[in-house]
Amino acid sequence: MTTETPDDTLLDRFECRACGYVYEPAKGDSTRAIAVGTAFADLPITWRCPVCGAPKKQFSNIGPVGSPSGFKENLNYGFGVNTLTPGQKNLLIFGGLAIAFLFLLSFYNVR
Ligand SMILES: [Zn+2]
Image 1 (cartoon, rainbow, N blue to C red):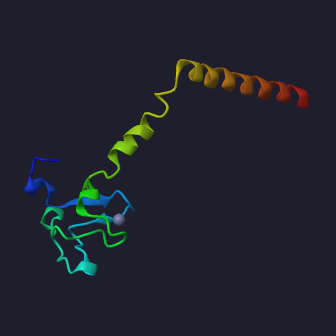
Image 2 (image 1 turned 90 degrees about the horizontal axis):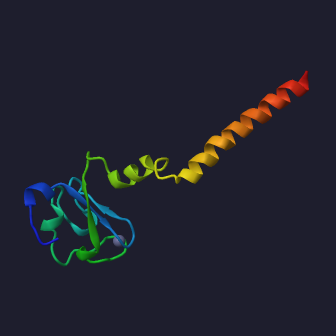
């Protein structure tokens, strides 16, 4: 993170990697007298996580409010089925067939 783009990061939220606390510029930090609208980059260097006391460098940019938060995680969930190996897909297909076959058998057994 060496490039500084203040305009883009003004409303970005930062998450504490130590405890999961999220600093939101839109809310500020009332426990440290940080005014609402203070960008994370503008926080004093002495500012620390109000929950666990981690320094600023322990925080990760997780993007502004309103952007799809956890986008990468959602992407992974979406790929869940597509990352099945061919063997796993066959298992699903034949497993489904076997269940359908058993269902038919039980259907005839009832009569
Ligand atoms: Zn923390």
